[in-house]
Length: 221
Ligand SMILES: Nc1ncnc2c1ncn2[C@@H]1O[C@H](COP(=O)(O)OP(=O)(O)OP(=O)(O)O)[C@@H](O)[C@H]1O
Ligand SMILES: [Mg+2]
Image 1 (cartoon, rainbow, N blue to C red):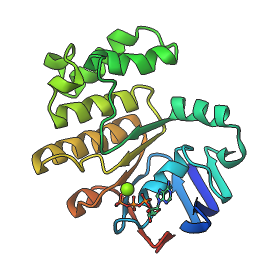
Image 2: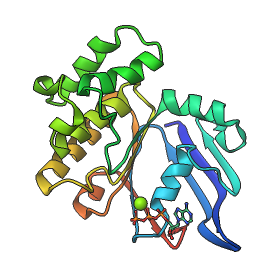
Image 3: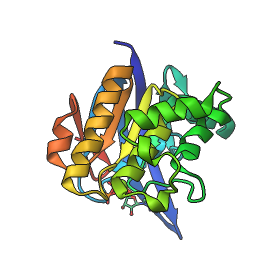
């Protein structure tokens, strides 16, 4: 299988006042296309920071990050966000849906921004696939947590990304909804041949991934 991601000696420091905190230290990592990976580790170990770096939402202090062979750590912000918009789907613990847009509009917007044909029809298909046929025209505030996260997933994967990054996607959900969300993510990744990297504190969910990465004090162990 082709290499999807390659991190070389990646460091991330945050400067707060005159103190620099080393959040990620000398991260070396290579992942393959279609690989499913869980990221585990204690609170504060650096899991979200790693996701932010891979998503290009945070800049490494040093080191290189290659996504499909391209070094995103040396690219302009515009170039990185272009790659992210087309190739990386991101799902967070909080759903971050646009509050005054319906479920359907939230998903269709991504497709529209990327100038894909028939955004509404495509968005409908996706939401129906995730069991939300009866919620297309509801606002996020009218949806349950599990439903909102399904909309967020539909939005994240609308572009058929080669990488899905999920940071504790089930962190705000009960165990039943957590299972459903995890199943949707793993099944989608499998069917569409996307790679899935999922941060989770749930050992059962972590086990569903082929590979597990453990982070401790900003290092992969
Ligand atoms: N913007 C920031 N400025 C300063 N320090 C930060 C910033 N963001 C994160 N940190 C610090 O970096 C460390 C790693 O944070 P991160 O959010 O990556 O942890 P995490 O493993 O995702 O934890 P959790 O499981 O609680 O979500 C923490 O010590 C945190 O306080
Ligand atoms: Mg986190």
